[in-house]
Each structure stands twice: as structure tokens, then as C-alpha cells.
Length: 346
Ligand code: TYM
Image 1 (cartoon, rainbow, N blue to C red):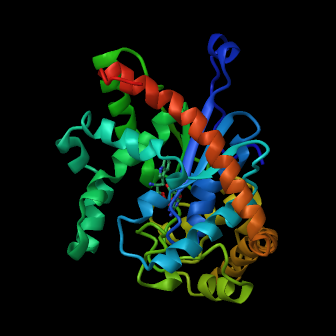
Image 2: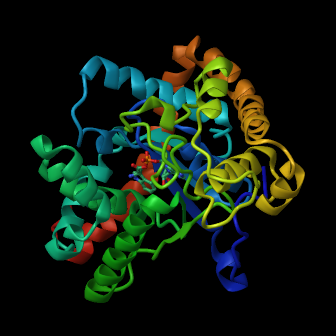
């Protein structure tokens, strides 16, 4: 699975001291889309071979929007099973559920008092979500990026594989880390966001000018990782394309460009190679070719997912094991932060 992310330059002095650390997380608010997969999950899987990785199902982030408790519980279990099915390997990485490690909530409070209201207010996702749900603009929604900074900084992560939409939050985590380090002395590693080579922003199939998102009101805009083959084919058939008949990734062809980058991501080709290969196909045939590549990529994951879901004891065991390892690593950083800030520790 290597080659999805741009290789990082490694500093020879530092690597002799410690292997670089990676952190990333996904919200269990429902089945992830192929945007989540291409934008983040695949890089998370690929990076396991080269780095010390910590990965979480970010359940604390999920409660910033309304949810039914029983469904929420099911979503977290499914997210754990799905990430294992995608290749997050508990033998290689520490994989856990965020709320099982209380240090995340604790560090959030400490960082809240080192984060400026003005900088949190600038977060575009907060502005967008407040507009979308004016009836539920809760303080948690506002504080969400600080919790995300706590996630990253607790594990002293060097790299954070994400899609473009989360880059602004990673920037905020960098600012918070730098401010804390300057105020108290070097404590946190200043993290760097890592984007995939293709698919850092997969767009909606129904409107290629907006991000593919499972919270889209129009289900034809997104493909979920557990959609069956017929549904995937139907959604791609309906995908909005552009005028003309050329298959090219150009600014005036956002629909075709989006389909090309999905095709490239699922076949391991570059966008240029995908363009060449598909040149001459009619739009209808091109869309079916993309659908087939997505179906072929998702099928083995869906089969493994079904296996994991039949083995809930195994999932619980993995959650337990991951939580213990993560809590151990997180506690070390948290204690350091408490001490530097002047708290009395027993
Ligand atoms: P979430 O759950 O919305 O998305 C998970 C990951 O998928 C990426 N992504 C996309 N990439 C490409 N195209 C798209 N259309 C697309 N949609 C989503 C996101 O950029 C993300 O990488 N707050 C985070 C979860 C989180 C986190 C963290 C991430 C919590 N703590 C610490 C990194 C580090 C979120 O809601 O992502």
C-alpha cells in the first residue's frame, strides 16, 4: 500500500532518536464515504509500515451533532470493524476509541486555556456547520478543533494524514503547540498534515463544486464504503459531468476531473495515466469504468467488514488493548503538561 502519500524527508539525527509518529482519527457518525477512504484511510494504512502510528475512532467529536444513542453505539462498533477491514492492523498500530482514553478530554481543557477565541472563530468548518444547524450551535462544535489538537499533541505526532478539509484544524494544532512551547518550554511536537497524492478533496457526484460528504442531503452525491455494487453503479451513472465530450482533468471540467481522481485513487494510477487510458470513451462508459474500479476496490473490504461484525468479542478485545496502549502513551504527555503549567501532581 505504499506510494499513496508523498514520502516524507527524514532527518537522520532525529530518526536515530525515535521513529516518527503518526496520528489520525475519523468520526464514527455513520458509514464513511469513498472521500474518507481516499482522502485519509488509505494513507493511514500505508503509513503503518514506516511510522509508529496511533489511530482512533473519534467518538467524542461525534457528539457535537444530534444523534440517537443506540445508533451512535452501533456506528462506533462499525467504524472499528471497517477500519480493521481497510487494513488498520493492531499488530502494527495502536488503534483505539477516543473516549476510552480520558487524557483527550483532560488535555482539551488545558489547551482551551491556551487557545484564543479569535483563532477558533476563524475555523471554516465551524462557520459552515453553524450555518447548517443553526438550532444546535453548541460550545462543543466551537471547541471541536481544540479536542482535535489534543488528540494529535498527546501522541507527539509528527505527521497527520488527512483530507484538505481538515488541514485548517491541523494548522490550529500547530499554532497551539508552538504557543505552548514558547510559553512553557518545548513540550509538544509541532505536527504536519499529510495529504494523499490524489483525492485530497473528493467532490460530490451530484455537484462537483462541493466536497463529498455523508451529511449531504442528496444521497446521490456520495458513495458510502458499504454501498452495494448496484447502488454504486447507479450513483456513478447519475454523476454530473461537464459539457463537451473530452475526458480531461481541467479547471473547466470539475465533474470529469473528480471522476478521474477517484479512478486514479482506486486503480493506483496517476491522474495523467487515467486520462490517457480513458481518452476516447463516451461519458456513459467512462462513468461505468470508474464505478467498476470503486466496486472492485471496496468488495474485499466489505467482505472483511462482514467477518469482523460477526465477531464482536474480537472487536471489544481490540478496543481494550488499543485503549490501554494509547492511555499509557497519552498519560506521559499529559503529566508533563500539568507539571509545566504549575499543577501539583501527586
Ligand atoms: P472526518 O471524520 O470528517 O473525516 C475523516 C477523514 O476523511 C477526510 N475526508 C475527505 N478527504 C477527501 N475528500 C473528501 N470528500 C473527504 N471527506 C472527509 C477528512 O479530511 C479526514 O481526514 N475531526 C476529524 C476527525 C479527527 C481527526 C483528529 C483527524 C478527530 N481528531 C486528529 C486528524 C487528527 C473529522 O471530523 O474527520
